Length: 119
Length: 112
Image (cartoon, rainbow over all chains, first blue to last red; front, side, top):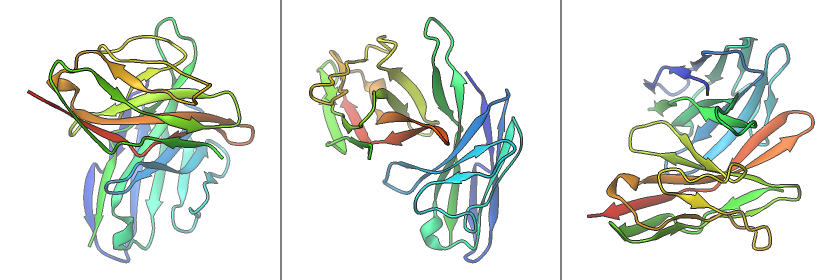
């Protein structure tokens, strides 16, 4: 399994500002994902971040609004730019890790999330 | 396109009663399905996957390809099972690797 740390865990932000969320993993991983979970809704994938290449964004998400950095195999950042109240959400970092035990496949692990409130 | 449906947003049962959380999916490829659980104030964590065919905390889930379902079941619910449960479908993509598509979640409450 992978241990994922996110910072900040919670923040209140002013409309029009930007905030960068950091994700640190305790092991090297090829793929890191950023999800959003808006109040009362399920998780939605924002983008996939691979080290050494540009992030791949899902439909409805663009780089100008959610720039992502992936400088190495253990770290990534997601910036929420020019925030509005609609961006109030939990943002989750996740990685693909190998599950211990008899099963030899991979699974996806999640950080604790960063809860942003835009006022 | 892949899709995961959890028809019940809320489910309430009494302690000791059986519980079933429904999940249906649509996917053109070979599905790989998971159940994730989020206890109050904790991170989302993997509960079980269909490939491993294991029982975790008394929960089981069987993939039924004919009915495109992956319902989560437990014969005797406990109060500590109260949590939000998400069904997820893993999609493997050639250019950008795998991703999870989540259902909307079911909030399970087990009453004493």
